[in-house]
Image 1: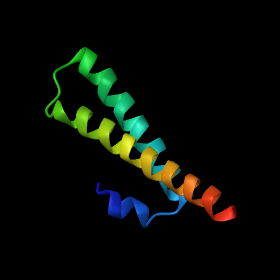
Image 2 (image 1 turned 90 degrees about the vertical axis):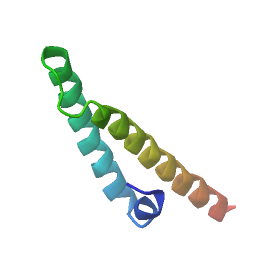
Image 3 (image 1 turned 90 degrees about the horizontal axis):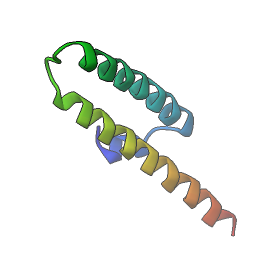
Length: 69
């Protein structure tokens, strides 16, 4: 997921996507404890996507605050 794609999303869509990815990450972490994952790098990419979503969401919040000043 690219930052440009995320910037085109609304705040609600970003929050929904974060929740979906967090759930997927939880399931993968749980499964990795019990069995070998087919794609162990998926955990890393999920973590980075979640961080990217949080970053863009924070950018939008700061831009909204700056616009009110």
